[in-house]
Structure formats: C-alpha cells, structure tokens
Length: 112
Image 1 (cartoon, rainbow, N blue to C red):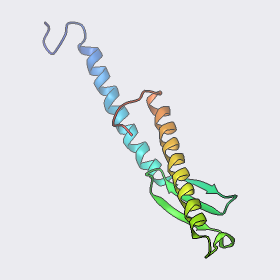
Image 2: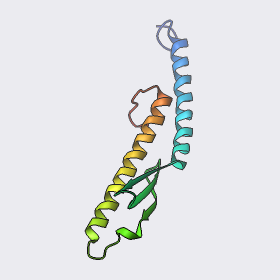
Image 3: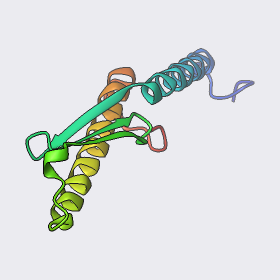
Image 4: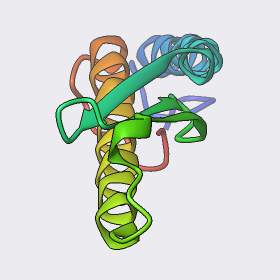
C-alpha cells in the first residue's frame, strides 16, 4: 500500500476532504443567516399570526382583538397553537430547502 492511503487515491481523498471542509464552512454561514430570517404563519383568517426564526424561535405573536372572547378562551388557545405549529413547520421547510440547495439535496445526518 502506498504511503498515506490507498494507491492512486491520495489526490482524490485530499480533494474530498477539502470539499467537505468548504461545505462545512458554507453550511455554518448559511445556518447563521437562517437564524436571522423569519417566517410568518396566520390562522383563522388572520386572527392569530406567529413569526418564527429559522432557529425555530417564536419572535412575535399577533392576536386580532376581535377574536378575544372571554367566554371562549379555548378557541383562542387553539388558534395560537395552530399558528405556532404552522410557523415552526414553515421554519423547518425554509431551513430544509435552503440547506438542500447548498448540499445538492444530500441528506447529511446531523447537518441541520
């Protein structure tokens, strides 16, 4: 066996390592950018709107005062829950889509 690995593959492995390191840097940069981006989800015809970051942190919840009914708090709770879940789903979708563009669609476990 040649020094440093398999015969004739030294250049290919070095090239692959360099490409992986470059991809790792690009992924880290994209993750930082996605943490700053937001998605918005509205439910109930705009009754409740939730804004979430690419890091899946809820940044803002807007509630239309017209849907606040002291006699039906459960409906408001359901609307908030639905809006939060939709915002998180959209954040996941955004991250997956952007990472897919960078990785060429490869699913790399633990990457995002």
